[in-house]
Length: 250
Image (cartoon, rainbow, N blue to C red; front, side, top):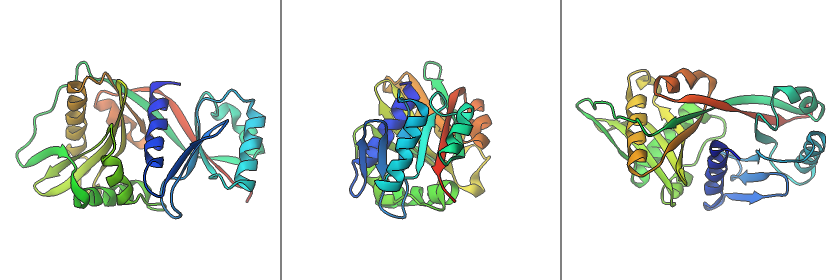
């Protein structure tokens, strides 16, 4: 399993450790489950050697009869565009694609920080609630994240939340999960009215510097198509793709 895939799996595993959430490794996949109405509930299938048709048949049966989530994420090597007809035959349809991106920390240098801007870890329930509200407004909307989940994760080993403040206003934030020598960036977000003003780049640079100080050699993330150019401008390179599918018989 590649570093980005392993880090993603650890991210969902950390979610499953929180109150009212669960994570389990089944024979062919892993499942993370959230309380009804909250993010995230999905199947993670990244590295299975099972034959494609059999695996999809088992997954569809698990969705129909065992209550596993109808959403699943997979690396391109397991399920990508080449398997489109097989996926459709089993009633799985693409809903999203992530670009896997990577950056080494060897040459990370921090940007100059403008007056009035502060970069620091997010601490306390109020700041994390504010961060969660930005995440839900810009990233999720339909199935929101619960600020109590992110607050609990921030107390976990290997997890930190960082924010960029302009005065007293939180304008940008992210969650960082460190696993071995790799740091994964998640929920990278900036308030809509503050986007394209440099705050996201400042925060990325700051976090990269912190990871370098901590001895982390690689930073990975999973970007939406719209954000790929932003990350490339900040030194990230494309390393692969991941796909999200949903089971539907409608």
